[in-house]
Image 1 (tube, one colour):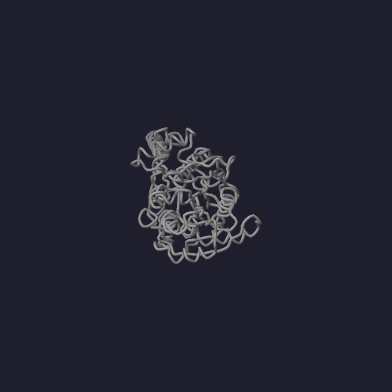
Image 2: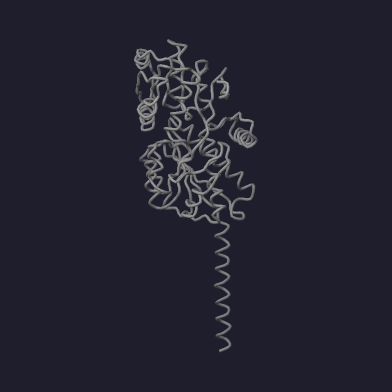
Length: 381
């Protein structure tokens, strides 16, 4: 009988020791966050920026002690090639990996929307640093955007046209993608149609990747615009500025925040001077948190200057880390619930998510002057 009691006691001790060791191991496991974007192809600049910023922020968080009492954050990166089909496949892989508790990405709205149903179905939060399509965040309660809605930014563009250029005749050029066409539609039919201080006199669409704008420029000039709003990224806005200003050097050009990149200046060269755009992040801001981020990013990545979307990717990881810390767990559902409650003070300003998963931002107005982005003083515009 005594032997049996001793054996039971030893067995209980072994079970308790195993449970303790297993629990201890669980609490020390890295917390995995996925970052997904185009790491190859025409938009690799954006996806690489996402990955770089997220890896940098994870390193900084880990060096400061990690989250949940010392757990490290591990970044798992994927290349979706800016393809909806590829994104949907990657979403399945991420969803099946129980160690991944959050997703930062994807880049284009259409690509983000191709992956979102899978993330919603399995219950893993996705924060896109760049998706601005109005329908994106409505795809589920696990779907968030750390970027402005199209209509908010498009209205900012119209304000810039009126306040900076005193524009009366505005033409719109849009790249023929889901984002470009939807943005132009909102700009023309929802926003400009309600204003009486300016008129949309013409609209043209172009295929993404176009390099010869001669026929498009002829059509745009026939509308006699004083200002053109370009719904496209830097790969279009830069060369378009080159070619349009060859025939009309006085045209006013307005871009969107996704064109805020040093690549725009390199492509547009001297014809970039005078281009204006709104952005929620300015890399030459004197704020200490912005200076620290920019300096660290440039030090780690060969002097490259982070863009607005890169800054939003950096903040997106910070949002996940804060949600995990405040929730007290790395449980997927708990993280989602906490994201709706957080107020995050990041390098791209203070942000919080509304009930739709949308983050609202305050914009800087930027202008290229002598080959550099400069901030416009709105009080003296």
